[in-house]
Image (cartoon, rainbow, N blue to C red):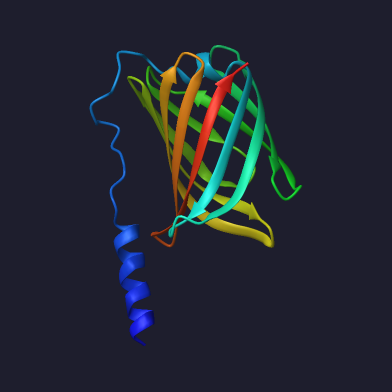
Length: 174
């Protein structure tokens, strides 16, 4: 019983830990324009960690982006460390100077995003493919433009309002 209570307390503390805010002070004078960074070829390398910091899965992603002045289409081809593959196709619409909305198969409703300086925040609910089916989770996805060719991404993943893990990804322009 004591172990269960301790585990519950640790899980609660981890789930309540801080996350960035789109109004946070930017760390550079760069502007992260999603359509500029993701147009063309991009590669990504990442991993998913559970709330205890255990790496559960690693992956690489080949991304092709096309921008028509209003819509950004991202074709993402995932290769996982266990040999699994997956393709996700995002259709993103620029809805304002710094705002976006988007859809992809598995995304419930509409994803919403906002740029602020060198930062982009993307929030959505998705039926995420996992090894044994799908799991409905919420993503609070944060991207920071490090250089004109590199973006750091940290996505906080929760289920029923409780954080279950994080995805950490580095994107590089090709």
